[in-house]
Each structure stands twice: as structure tokens, then as C-alpha cells.
Length: 121
Image (tube, rainbow, N blue to C red; front, side, top):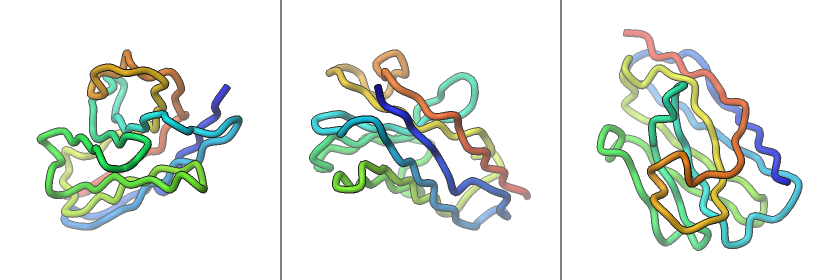
């Protein structure tokens, strides 16, 4: 089992920045892909493969958000810049053990509880 805990959410003005963190425990994430989704609909935001060399972004966040991971710490991060009110959502960290479409939430096996991000206009 893998437990995930997100942090770093909060209230920020439009144009501002936030950095979300996700710490994993329970087992090493060697070989796994980690991703970020938002809201109840599990809208894809970004994903990063184990090596960190392959990264995926949703078009809506490309150029504004940066995903990264620290395998030694079993952690993944989401640096969010130029935030917009429409980025307001609960952000979830997730881990996938399988190979598939990493923009689709069904391929993810473990989920955190989420952290709220609110962007005011």
C-alpha cells in the first residue's frame, strides 16, 4: 500500500504562485508514475514518469505549471505560476503502477486526500 499526503494549498491572488508537495509513504515508488489531478472530476493536470525524463501536461496548464519529483524522498511537486481563478480546485496527488494513458485517472492506483487551491481575481 501507498499513502499520499498533499500540502501547500491555499489562497492566492490571480497571477501569483503556489507550490504543492506530495509525500508518499508505505513503499518506494520505484518505477511508478506520479500525477496531479484536480476537482471531483479528476481533471488531469500533469504527470511525471519515474526517471523524470518524461513529463505530461494538460494544455490548460502548459507553460505555467511545472511538475518535478524527488525519488530519494518519495515526493512529487507541482510548481504553479501565473495562477488564474479557473485554477481554483482541490488538487490530488496520485500514483500509477501500470503503463497506460497517464492523463486518465483510471490508470492511477493510489490517491491522496487533496489540498485546496483558491485563486482570487
